[in-house]
Length: 107
Length: 121
Image 1 (cartoon, rainbow over the protein chains, first blue to last red):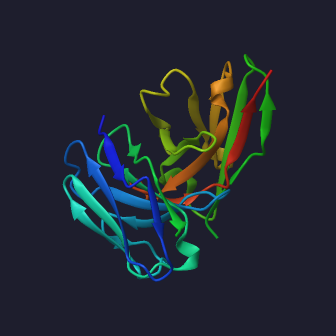
Image 2: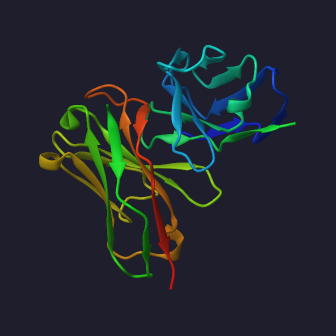
Image 3: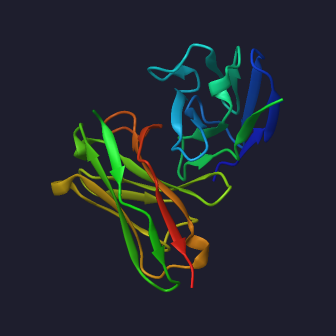
């Protein structure tokens, strides 16, 4: 099983801030990493796949980077609609695993 | 429009059986892996398992192997998640989701709306 450490678990920020979320793997996964956004009461939505490829329709202020064991999701200029919980997921090996989640809240 | 539509909320007693569904439309159902994800109240996402409806190849997380059964009926483009004997700890929201590329093991790009399962005596 690949263990994932996602940090921070809670991030307080203001509109317009640049925020960064980290996801670290217990072993290398090449670029088989996705990032999802989940708002309260809603299903998750895919933001980024293959570590850095933006899903169609996702605003360009979202970006992903990394490979191997260390990955980052960056929101360059936080908007009001970005306050949500974010999860990373590896799809390199079975069982697939999700990070613990990062809640981005209004400061 | 590509979508996954899940069955409605369920309230069950411990020990009862349950089968929830996820119907795909707007795409070739047999060509894409479909997975199930659990979210317990106030908690994060847990990957349960996936199925390829084309040949019913199924993979489970060790955490859920033997606890649930994932199946699919390609004739009606529907995937299922079932329990033979529910426990209170099965209380959660369950999501189905489709892999992004046909035949490939990939990220989930399309998600169902979720099915809330409540198990209480």
